[in-house]
Amino acid sequence: MTRRHHQHEELRNAFLANRERVRSWLEAWEIPEVVWTDEFNEVPSPWVVVERDRASWLKRHAPFMDEYDWMFFARPLSPGVREVRALWHFGAGHRFEKLDLTIISLCDPGYLAEKLTMAVHHADLKSWRDEDAQSLYQWLVNGVSTTPIGGGVRGSNRLGFVLLDFTRFPTPDGDVTVRLTAVETDRALDGSPLDDDGVSIPPAS
Image (tube, rainbow, N blue to C red; front, side):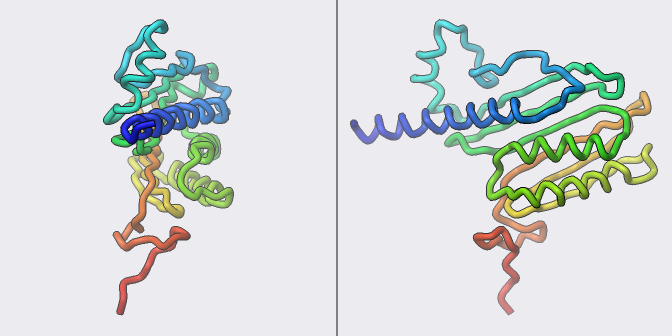
């Protein structure tokens, strides 16, 4: 096997690992109040590939994509939930870039915090721990329930190597739009570096 062929295989395997990661996440995130509008697509956006060409696409194009997304839209089965959207974004070298989650619903802090927390918990983010889920849940409950409900809320939090940005805004119909993005980071909120355990390293005195 030539070096070039070996690199080709490594990149293809990285794409396949990302695809399985997203597929597994979609299956694990339990949100029975909605149904996804489409089945999982093995070819991410912006590519559109017919079934008969997918094997060739996987071999020739998938390893060398600069960036790609899996986007999911759901329609409600419960009157309290209006819309759910999720986006996984990967960049150069098949590096994970962002998980972006949006829910439009009645302002139910416990429900919204639970669903967003479980979405992040199942995302297999860098060094994520079970105890991080409880910390995230409580932070989100506080964010969603901030009064007045008709006002906007914005905040950032870091749990280990995961940086989280949260917003909540009212809708014209009296509901709320909550959005949570998760990225992996090697910096604390103040910009200081993190050690191998995800703890901020104080500047040398």
